[in-house]
Image (cartoon, rainbow over all chains, first blue to last red; front, side, top):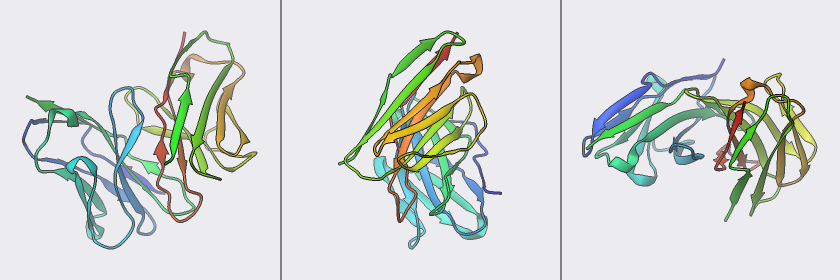
Amino acid sequence: AQSVTQPDIHITVSEGASLELRCNYSYGATPYLFWYVQSPGQGLQLLLKYFSGDTLVQGIKGFEAEFKRSQSSFNLRKPSVHWSDAAEYFCAVGRYGNKLVFGAGTILRVKS
Amino acid sequence: SQTIHQWPATLVQPVGSPLSLECTVEGTSNPNLYWYRQAAGRGLQLLFYSVGIGQISSEVPQNLSASRPQDRQFILSSKKLLLSDSGFYLCAWSVSRDEETQYFGPGTRLLVL
């Protein structure tokens, strides 16, 4: 069965520090991979996605993610975190014709 | 460009009352449409999805139902709300071909008392 694991429920980083949010998946084939961000009380906004090609993908707000097939991972990174990045982040996997499977989310707190 | 609307934004309802949440998409035709529920401290649970008018697939047996009376309208309903129906309800759409990128609406916060 398809599944997505985000091992960190909460992460706290200092403003200006680098960030890496982890995502591991279990899927029968190479899936499409997504990262979404959700601010409190808001809907989900797409940060970036991977379908094929270059395994390092760039997204909005200065985020990037790297697909590592051997590790079944799609970790999200940002070199310097801003206080406005505090939110909940969701990793999701899917494939054409199949529904998305979401991880449980990682809540990011940013210390000033 | 495409936009997705949900209303109401917030709703407080007594147990046993009916429910109707509406989602509409603009700027695209024949989208796939989805209803998710997000309970406090939990991830997203897919409730229903639709690939066309009148075509509804249910993911989780429950107290809720969905309908798609028009191409870009998706409605989530209940005849009698339960306390456990409280949560944040998100509607999403995707292009009905090529890829499964889903775009989410702003959500409806439902509190059942």
